[in-house]
Image (tube, rainbow, N blue to C red; front, side, top):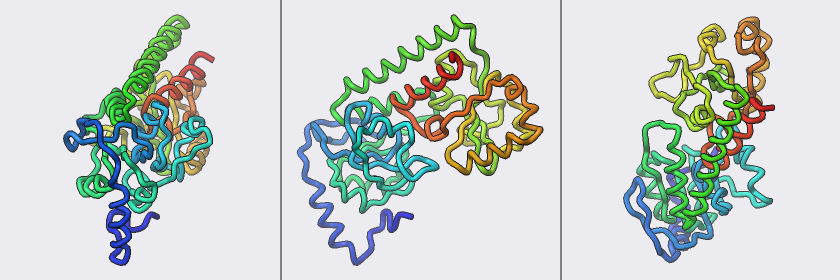
Length: 312
C-alpha cells in the first residue's frame, strides 16, 4: 500500500518542503474554470500528472503522455485499453484514485495536475501547492459527463481543438454505428452487468458505457435494481439476475478473481436458464474499460466492442 499519503512524516518534512519549492516554478499563462474557481495554468505544460482515469484518457487523446497516473480499478497499472496508446512511454503509477502517493506525485515534478471530480478539499490544498490542480465540477451521474470533463482537461492542456475533434469523432462514429445497426435490423434491449467475486452488479443506464449503448440504438435497462447511489445494484444472486430481460447482456469482469467467479456461475443451472444465455447474446467485455474508464479513447474502444459483437 502507499505510505503516508497526505501526511508527510515529521522526519521528511524538510525534504518535502524543498520538493514543493522546486515544483512551484512554472510560468503561468492562462486560466480555466474549475470546481475550485478560476486557476492559472501553464501555457504549454510539459510534465503532466493525471489522478483520474478520465484525465489520462483525455490527455492521451490530446497527444500528451502524462509523467504520472493512477492505476485502474482492479489492477496495478493503467487500464488495458490504454496500453495501445502509450507508444513505449509509460507514466509512473502514483497511487489509485482515492489513495494518492503524494511523494510519488512530487517526484515527477509536475507543472500541471489533472484530478478527478469530488477531490477532497484537504487533498486539493496539498496538491495545489505542488502544481496547478484542475478539478472538474462534480455533476449528477449522466452519460455525457465525460465530454465536459474532457473539454476542461483540453483547456488546461492548451489543446482544446484536439479534444473537441476527438469528441466529434466519437459522436460521428456512434451515429454511423446506430445507422448500421438499424439497417441490419439489430437492436433491442440491453443490460450491463459487472461480475464481482461477491456477486453480479447491474450497472446504471446513466453511465458512460451504457450511454454509448443507448447512442447506438439499444434500450438500456437496469430492471429497477439500483441501490441508493444510483451507479449499480448491490450484489445479486443468480435468481435475482433473472429479473433482467434484455436481449443483450454485456458482461464485464475487472480481473482474474472476477473471471473465476463468472466461470463458476456459468456452470450453474440458474445462469444457463437465462433467456439471453440460451439465445447466445451474452457479450463478455473488459470491466476496466466498460465500468471504470471514460474519455474519447475509451469511447472508441467500447464502440469497437459493440460493433464486433452486434455486426460480426
